Amino acid sequence: MPLHIRISLTWYPTSLGQKDRGAGQTSNSGTAELLWGICTMRWSKSSPLLAGLPVLAAFFSTVPAHAVDGQTASTPDSGFIITLGGSVEMAPDYPGARRQGISGLPSIDIRRFDEVEELSATDDGIDYSLLDIAGFEFGPVIGFRDRRNSSAAGFPGLHDLSFDVDAGVFLQTWVVPDQLRFRTEIRQALTNGSGLEVDTGIDWFKRLGSDWVLALGPRLSFADASYMQSYFGVSPHEAALSGLSAYNAGGGLKSVGLTASISYQISPTWSLDLYDRLDDLTGNAARSPITRSSAGSRLQNTAGVSLSHSFSLDLGH
Image 1 (tube, one colour):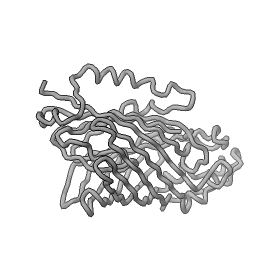
Image 2 (cartoon, one colour):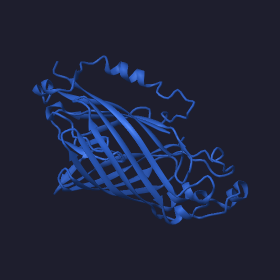
Image 3 (tube, rainbow, N blue to C red):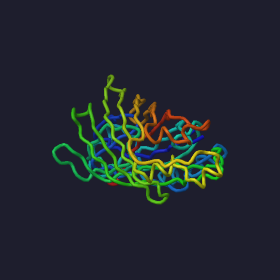
Image 4 (tube, rainbow, N blue to C red):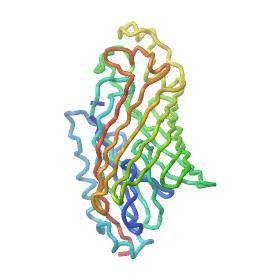
């Protein structure tokens, strides 16, 4: 993507004191994460990047709110915690691309005062845990699929791909509470026909004092034939127009990777996160003429920084 901008809006409970932060996000068994402007918030370098945010800010300014501090813990069942944040990422323009670009996506996370929060990773999908059985959490999850403008990428005649939301389920378990987590997400594209993707990973979290959290973990990503052909395949007709070799990309292991992040709790209401994820395309994705072209690369790196601010919404007043 030419540099990515992701804006997240999250809600946390003040009754727990300082937030537990991991890799820039939190996740919990009662978190409802809503997306604002999903289908329209993708920006290029020349776009009015954050033009919609004042509207959202104006909405929240009309409701009673307090800074997140110890005083709000006195009404643990009467409201929510809101965290508004903005992330800036540098990431590939599309899967297999060498060029990097800008995109943006705001989201809202809603959480009651009495809900327990967990550490999470920046590349977690937006989830809601419905079941927790014998230490295994299960529930719905959504993610996002990158668009591709093939002509702009240097492949005239190759099919384009529109930005899309994918949806499915996640399963995770904490092998060591608050330290070692296994997680898998299975998500299906909703509208652009790019098939099924399965992401699995292990995350190790380490608290460094009271304000810092370090996270590190390996990643495996699998995809079905529809996904692989959408992003890495070239039909004979497209080959004649684009100059690429015809290629039928079958399903299987798509990439292996590693992600790392460091989170700093600036104050009870502000937090800062730095993160990076490096993926190496494998199998059919690596052998694709799109990846092997001068505009392509097997190595896919995403690096970013996010800043978030929390406040409470007290429904009892």
